Length: 277
Image 1: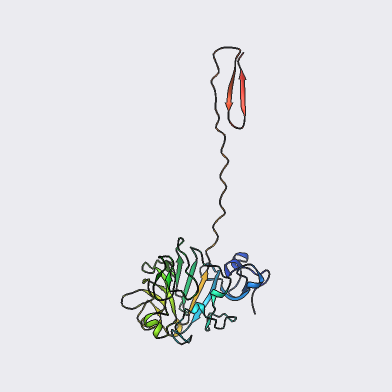
Image 2: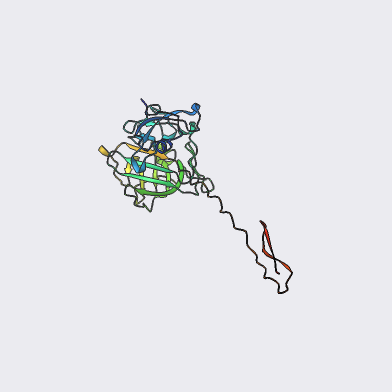
């Protein structure tokens, strides 16, 4: 059962904007505004103002999928989105637009109340929801693992996580690929996601593959599953039209001789003449 009532809107954020009292739950959205693009999604309408769309629910680093993949390319319970049970969708096959600069991604740590909010740089491109392993913001450098974008991260208290710079993965390449790790998340390394050996990482990280919250120890219990969410960058304010400029007024001093005309004002709008008796 979905909570959608009324026209099919483009996103969870659009739903929240249309109804500030909208509740978290399952909705139908039409990403390109057409019924043909309709998909079922789960919206979080409370965290950080709401408007978040669930993209992935993952409870294991290697067993959720059959080989090393980017989970955002996999259809798993695609029409039954849930923040508690395994879920993913091949987002590259939907009409979801490529996230523009300023878009946000959220990673929640089970029911602990902890999360990381990653803000895509306003001048950065999103490299894709697919299988790409190239950094589209750095001359398409091949990093060997899944790569998505670059930005800035904050914790649940809105505290800056200064070392976190990349949204990337532990998948496809190296030991991540050979051991079947299906990892994505946020971290300090450009070429792959790792939270050991002094590196900073949140998500399904190396090494070995595990659900980690910037720790060498993999999470269990109330700290799993990890859920990944997306909220597109809001449209900026409409540009303010420039104010009309008052025509510059020009005043000409009256001549000393009587019986002569002179121009009081002279501008593109009007001319005003005077006559001295």
